[in-house]
Image 1 (cartoon, rainbow, N blue to C red):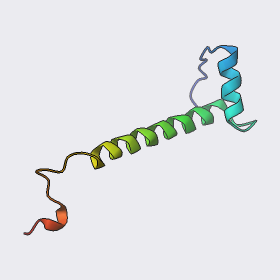
Image 2 (cartoon, rainbow, N blue to C red; image 1 turned 30 degrees about the vertical axis):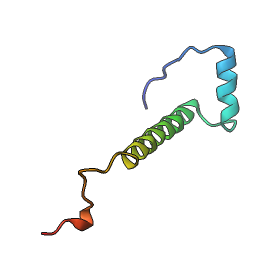
Image 3 (tube, one colour; image 1 turned 45 degrees about the vertical axis):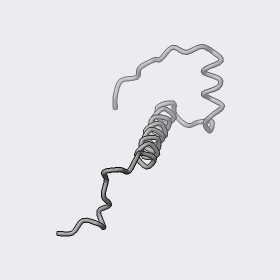
Image 4 (cartoon, one colour; image 1 turned 135 degrees about the horizontal axis):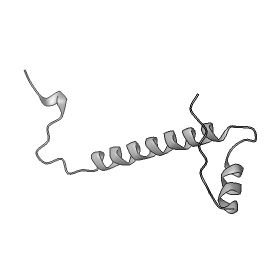
Length: 66
């Protein structure tokens, strides 16, 4: 197991953080969950940007003939 690290936060931030997750869930699990959620959010944003791009000059894979 990794050594314990402490991250200083203000009391309001700590309380807000605690209110977001079920009681008894370890902080490490909460942070891991938040990190995964953030990664998914970034991926979704990139997918939206890619989907909304100009399509001039692009050919769909189904149009490519060998």
